[in-house]
Image 1 (cartoon, protein in one colour):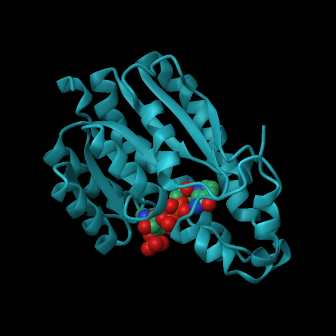
Image 2 (cartoon, helix red, strand yellow; image 1 turned 30 degrees about the vertical axis):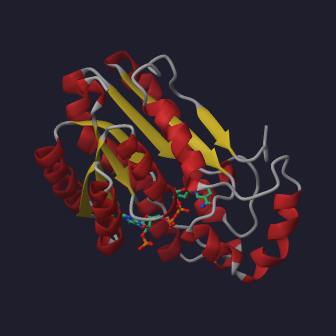
Length: 252
Ligand code: NAP
């Protein structure tokens, strides 16, 4: 692999689910992976397993909604692994609540993690990418941003925001050699999805929803990671501002 391909890649929420899959894939692709997660035990576990397999990875505890955490974690990653070339904004939370029962605190927490988090992450890595004249940013959105999803008003709104964030940054950062793309997964087999499936309303609907997909199963984290790997590739520099559904054909 060419030396330039060994980028420092920051993956938020990299200690679980999709982020774990992306971290493992990037490490296999030769990148140096900085795993940021609010769950430091999980982040350390994934980093240690990557290192055992011969890859390069470090774990950093951060609440992505906190500027101080973000700056400390990415500063430490930069010092250990070099300037950040790739960022995957993956960490997010969800809640299933009828709209008339959503309270201010829950709404604001989802916006803080799912929207403010990516805003802080991009601002923090941007100096490295601008200096290099090269960068790859991938934002994990959701099918919930594209179709109506019952009892997910705050989450869906946050993911719709991420799609607009992606398109806006693609315009601003394209001239600087930085691409910004988004992925909209449907149901991917992760701890987050497993928690959702055990929710009262969702359990009843889940099998029927999946059965209606052309590929009638849950997706896997490695299938999202493959899309991230494409958007992060050296030769993907003409692809920006895109929203890619990795969703078993759930929406066209
Ligand atoms: P997950 O299994 O819950 O993993 C998310 C990771 O992010 C967890 O380690 C979580 O820690 C961490 N995290 C949560 N809040 C954080 C914060 N404030 N700061 C830093 N880390 C934080 O979720 P996932 O299913 O892999 O989801 C990953 C992404 O895919 C999310 O953006 C999600 O919206 C999106 N997505 C998932 C699906 C799906 O079906 N799985 C579908 C569409 C979109 P804790 O476990 O401690 O909270």
